[in-house]
Length: 176
Image (cartoon, rainbow, N blue to C red; front, side, top):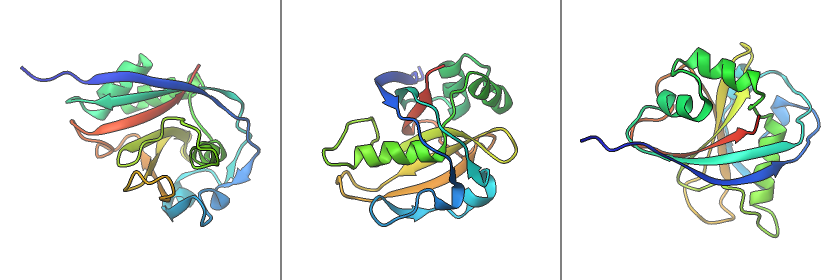
């Protein structure tokens, strides 16, 4: 008998409103980030729009299902990438890069705010890419040390190598 995928709500927190910013100026600086995937500049819009205040649900996922099946369960869409993307955009469950930076800053701030980011796991945030569909910003860091810096990269939602069955991850979704 195959083990089921567990999708557990971890917490909710308030997403702060952030101003617009160029993508090239996101995830830079020595204080929080050690690696910035250069494809962020090609795959995401050149300007990150105003990010509105809202509520975020952090979901912990571990199990045997593929990434698209997990996202389909979380969103209520079918497991096709285009359906998941449409749902996330229609219900405004996507992030801007400055909002993601704010979350990392709050997590690494003084005092540290527990907002659900976990070292050694994949932390995924849906964003709108230059094609007008959803891609995912993947934040990671190798150790649980609070001062360890984060790496940021972008992966297309329609690629199958985002996460594999059995991978443990956190997904950060804006509340509709």
